[in-house]
Image (tube, rainbow, N blue to C red; front, side, top):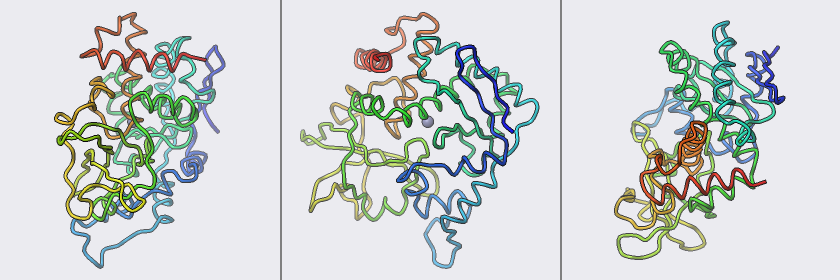
Length: 319
Ligand SMILES: [Zn+2]
């Protein structure tokens, strides 16, 4: 049975127990996380990767990985059952009436050991996944504001998934479009890592490269013995968008030397690995500033960043 907490506006907090969580953590849209996983995604998460891709190492398939994910779910302790509504009340208060729509009618939470996803907080379908060690570490530190910010960040990922029209407007506002079909090339294709909160890696943004030409660049998270990431330039060739130099060792773009990147994205966050992450961080900043009656101008480092916050606000608030 779930523990349910209901806010006066009817929003329900559901803390799923382990048996329900084991099912929900598998519920994913077609073409999303589980469909996009690479062998590297699976092997690294299950702790059986080899840095050089040597033959003979164990290569667990998708079904074994899914079983591994299912085994990671946990029941909530009494302390967590008490703490979760406290943290979520903070988030609910911060959102207030203006940003109430960010919170889903059923605000669902799954608890795991964290083993399945590097110990990170993340989302799956309409549920937010809480890794036991990281949650309890922050709880022990009394870091409620930080926990609330994390919950709001994850809540935005669910909002974005459940509201494709808003998502499209928000992505467009910070310059990101989908480019299809996309081919990352030999080096990155095998090493690509899938972010559960931004599983679709076909988004790119147009900038002016160092040669003064228009160029699309795409963010890629990849494994080279550790989690790494960068933006890579694309070219359209033979019907595909391809990473420039993708068959050798492609070099990431220096975002400080291309033109037009920060003008579109702003500098409100340096967590740039996916448009959904950029937006989630901006939304946390925006909602917190408005809750404290702060003028947004004091929160943004420059005029582009300020305009990003204002435009995100306008998109979120319009009916
Ligand atoms: Zn995120």
